[in-house]
Length: 253
View 1 (spheres, helix red, strand yellow):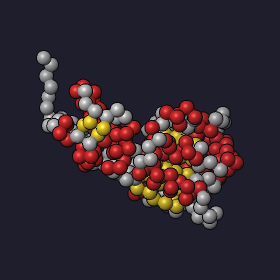
View 2: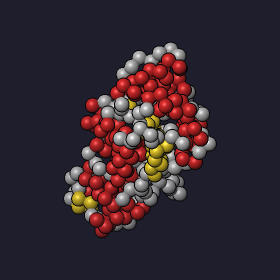
View 3: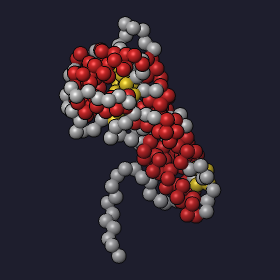
View 4: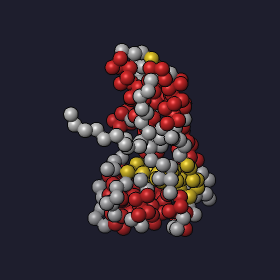
């Protein structure tokens, strides 16, 4: 699925109201690319393990800087990439790849807005990396690629692209402050104890997604038991969500 960022989405996006570490980190890197001197390259690579909140951080940056955002799919070829970028721009795609490339370059150059490409690993798999280089060279606009932790190593084989990267920006694992911010967002009617916040941060192993699941478990525990506060005492011997499949086979009664 791919789309541009519009006002309705910006209002619905959780990360626009939660300043998680990766939101701040990615935003700062993108700003440096957008404000760089003309003689410096303008591509940023933001990478890290699944669940670290990279996509939401990218969407927050796209909203803040009025960027063009796409989320690549495994089935996309070069024409599909260009089609969805133009869709995000609100433009009608031309029939040929070369003309769509010109359309995107022209729009980026005129507006000066950044291009954010999520799931950029899929472009490497499809050998479409040079397409992004063409868009960057043809417009001069800042470009942000978002992908998994192996993305820098995979891009190393594309020297002409690799040399245009201004900054390699690794995503950070969820922190206690992040977990607390997520608790305030997702559990507004429940106070989550500091001891439980610390434990959830640890068992989530850097994943904001796992932290959100554990926080929701705490919220449900509070709701089901009429609790206003949930800490390690109230949590008791409940299992935490770690992302690992259970070894227990549940049989139907």
